[in-house]
Length: 159
Image (cartoon, rainbow, N blue to C red):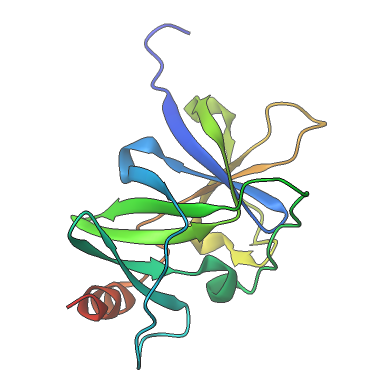
């Protein structure tokens, strides 16, 4: 369909599921870095790391949503951090494995079921399944992952 808006999703694995976020919300993807833990940070904040002189708070979505880590094959790359830009604030999220960038049309995005593999539907923009034999791709709504209060706490962590 000509003129239909397409999303580009950066996809990654967390636990056994495949997730995607709009490429416009992703600043970059970096290899796992040493993270300095912070006292009194929310339980799902791993700490902070320095990315080219910018302090980035690192969020562990495994802890936040009680997900297990993905099983890794021998020789397989460890995950990394996806650096998100949420309303001008950079936040890193830990991922198990980077997948690829996937084009998605709005017609492919379906409403999420009420409860979906540990992550509440309020954090999910939609689910995509282009092939009935393929796993679902869960499109996260990064602006809903953290409420305003949590986002403020995360931003304060890096200061």
